[in-house]
Length: 76
Image (cartoon, rainbow, N blue to C red; front, side, top):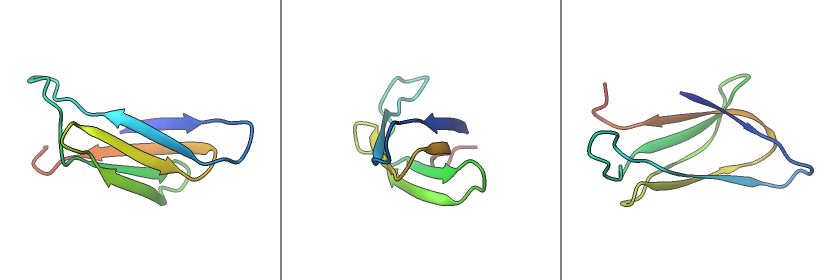
């Protein structure tokens, strides 16, 4: 799990963009679940699934500290 901090000068919305790659094969990881939670209370903010190229985008509604959970079915 990764802790993510987002800062800004105003109350605009933000987007987290990422790319998931398998560490061994170096291939893009598709259909991986990406979820965003508020760090303080673990409330769900939003989420998505990575595309066939391993790319994902999650909207962040406000400035704060968040946790990004990335998981795939079959991962131990």
